[in-house]
Length: 133
Image 1 (cartoon, helix red, strand yellow):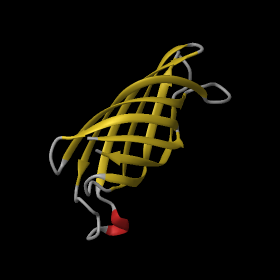
Image 2: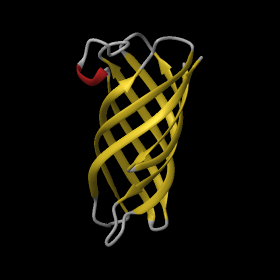
Image 3: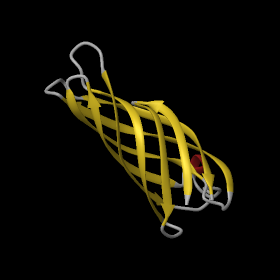
Image 4: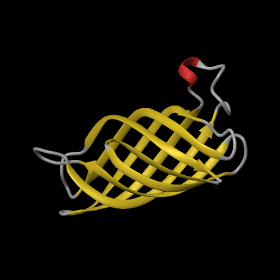
């Protein structure tokens, strides 16, 4: 089990808890602040969602750029104009070596939509820390 926090774009900030089911799969819940669609400027929202991770390798030492994880994340965000959805698919590095503090980075694509406004599809980038219990 781990507790994590991260910063990025389109998901500006997230805090979550993730359970490592086995060496390959992890599932978590999170609360986050993110950007979703808008007419002139992207609108922000606050909400929560789920995170699923598939670990290609525990350390990433044998892979290109240490890439060892693929993630899918979905959030429902409350915005000033109603509700919105934020979906993300990313790949990157997140070590699951055991107890302690670790660093992760992720890059991929995000789709934010809600309130009848133009959807926002954009590159997403995240960095963060996790505490493995």
